[in-house]
Length: 244
Image 1 (cartoon, rainbow, N blue to C red):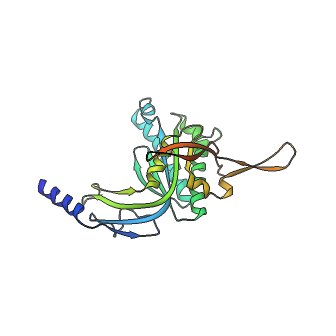
Image 2 (image 1 turned 90 degrees about the vertical axis):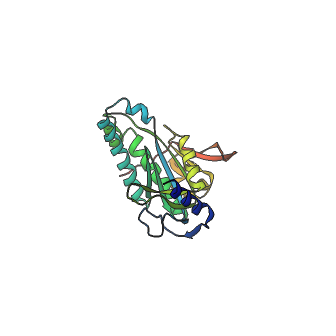
Image 3 (image 1 turned 180 degrees about the vertical axis):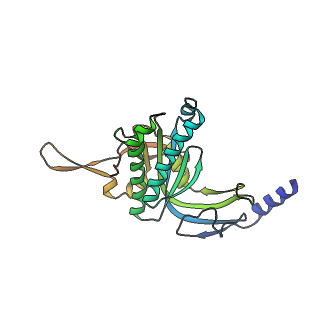
């Protein structure tokens, strides 16, 4: 076994790495992904959502109750993400990565719209889901969003439970970093790149003034984040988007 591991590591380190550009989000069954030095690179908007205080919630309930909370939480997130073109990957504890493939303002804005839908369903008082989950416990969470190129490769060994995909890129790391900063009431944070490419429908809220005229209100406020040793601007919001 020792020599086998040594030989594999030497092969990985000493061999060239082949990267193929694609326009979709790969999955674990993709035949182009082997355990060799092969990766698939795609561009997408990355949404990361992570539950806050899950250990505290766990210790308030028995395991079956906590399982119910997780089932409701994940079902809501996955359904909303898929409805707007998101591809759900990497269930990790109480966090999920969702990729919205493409480079257009529409696909990028769909990721933000999905985040606002998630907030509405999971956190707004009028929401049936929030009230039902509070039968056991309220759920807090943070969402981070960034856009960029992501490299996917397969890791592990042969066998259905011995393998997984790894997602490498600043879009993933920054989305996680931004998401970690957030909780109620400002659940959602986005990178400056995402903000600068939003369509108006997810950037501005239209309201009537006391004079009866309509005005656009920016739903986002700027803040600072330290990333890769530098401080940079990102944007956050407490707004949500209702689902009919």
